[in-house]
Structures are given as structure tokens and as C-alpha cells.
Length: 119
Length: 235
Image 1 (cartoon, chains in turn orange, red):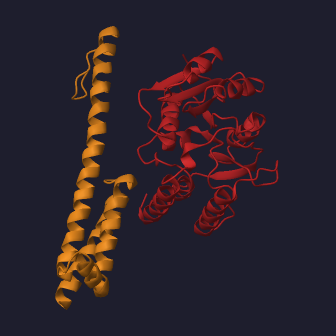
Image 2: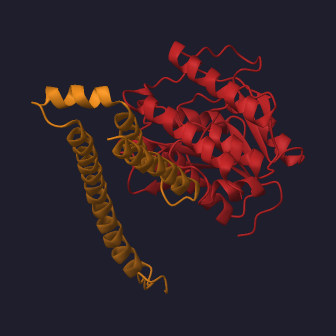
Image 3: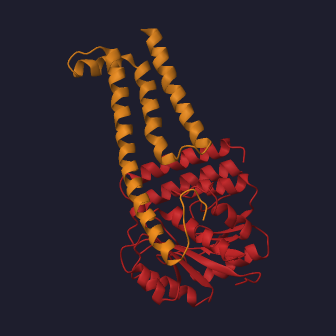
């Protein structure tokens, strides 16, 4: 049991540190980092607070504490994936609109705009 | 068109500021006939029309990108037009235009790269709400500790920049979602000199959407993370 705790804790901490490193390297924006950081934090807290896992396990109808840990990880991943789908939907709309505008403007300006940057 | 030395423009990001934007532009006109660049951040009201009627140059962003990105658009445009200096101001009339020349002369005489108007240096009697006061105080103390100098207004959007600083604000390194204290720390790290100048600010006549609901929590998180990684970066 203790091995699982340490493993889960390490995963949580590594995730946390890696996310911060990604932000530092400008590969990840702060607005997308927060949900990942929260996930890492929750995993660390849950790995080391066995009592909380037991409590939640019982609350949910008697499931194993270790199952609670995985349940939380799953739920968070689901939320993150959903959050990203929503962001992607918005970005797709915006890209579509901008592409359409470009087609219209380049006709007016007699410029040919190609997606690979050559004009 | 060539630009002479000492030419400057005023950059104002605006999102749904009808009724206020014309007052702001006219207020500036009373002190200078420089180019006023209004960047409409996807405004859906009469902001663009009013700004055009008031004689300003208007850049229209097709979508709302947020204050920082709109401001940055203004800087990109100003750099392309060859301006040596730029002033950034708020659209809602909070910034008193009579201080524009005061901020400008600090960068024109090259004592600093960025001159920042501070509300808390004795001019006027700006009194923020309780929550805002705590927020500003927190970041003020943090910034002062990190940079080892006295900072009085870490979130002031009333600034004058020279061309060197303008390049930084227009770059990909500029934090567009809520540029504030982290920008000061970046200036400090990059060796861009800045100085605070006392200015008078009025209370905003508009309910800023920036201060409602979840956003202050996100702002606190974002600013702390941004400051932390800025200190870690090598540049």
C-alpha cells in the first residue's frame, strides 16, 4: 500500500513540476496550465491522505480507497479533455472565420495568401 | 510616409466603450494632436463608430482577444508606422490625459525606457475598493521585494514607452492575458529601465467585467505562476 502511495505521489509531483516547466518554456499557456496543476495537486493530496480516500470510498458505496484515487484521476482527465474540446471548438470557429475573411480581402487587395506563408 | 524623431502615438484598447470613448479621445485632443490608435477588441456596440467620428485611427479585431492582446495589436501597428514613442491608456477615461506629456518627456530624455503613471504617489486621491486595495497591495509588496526597489502601482496601464520597450511589448514574450506585475518583472529582467511618475486617475465609470466572479481567482493564480516562471527563465 505504501508503495502505491509513493508512486501516486511521485506521479502527482512530477506532473506538477513538468507543467510548470512547460509554462516556463512557453510551450503551455497559463490559462491551460491551471487545470493540470490542480490535478497534480489533488493526486498528491489524495495519495498521502489515506483517511480521505477511505472516507470517500465509503461515501461512494464501499469502494476500495485505491479505486478512489484512480476515479479522481479519471474524472480530472475527463474534465481536461472536455475543456480542451470546448476550446478547440471555439478556435475552429475563429480560424474558419479568419480564413474566410482572408479569402475576401486577398481578392480585393489582389494578393494571394497561402497557408504556408508564401505570398 | 517617414516619421520624424520624437513622434508618438497613443494606444487605447477598447471593448464596448460607447459613450466613453469619444469623451476620452476628446480629452486627449485638448492636450495633443498626435495619432490616437483605438484597438476595438471585438466591440459590438457603437465604439468603432464613435472613435472614427472623433478622428481616431481604429483597428478592428475580428474577435475579443482580451486587453493584453488588443494593446499588443496597437504596439505592432505603431512600430510598423515607425513611431519612436507610444503611450498606452485606458478607454474609460480613468487616465488623465494632462499627464501624457509628463510621462512622454521621461522617455524622450532617455532617462528610462518605460515611464509608468502611478496612482499612489500623491497626485489626486484615487481610492480603490477594499478587494482591489488588498490585491494591489499584495502585488505591490511582492514586486517591491523581488525587484528590491519601491513599487507603488504594479498594475498601472498608463505608460509611456520608447521604441526599444515597444518591441518587447509587441513580442511573443509579452504576457497577453493579464499583463500587469509580471510585465514589470520582465522589464527588470531584460534590463529595460522604468520609473514611476505620479499621475492622477479617476474612478472608472464602468463596471469592469475583469473584476467579476471567477476571474480574480484566475488572475491571482496566473500572476503568481507568471512571476514564478519569469524568475526561473534565463532571458
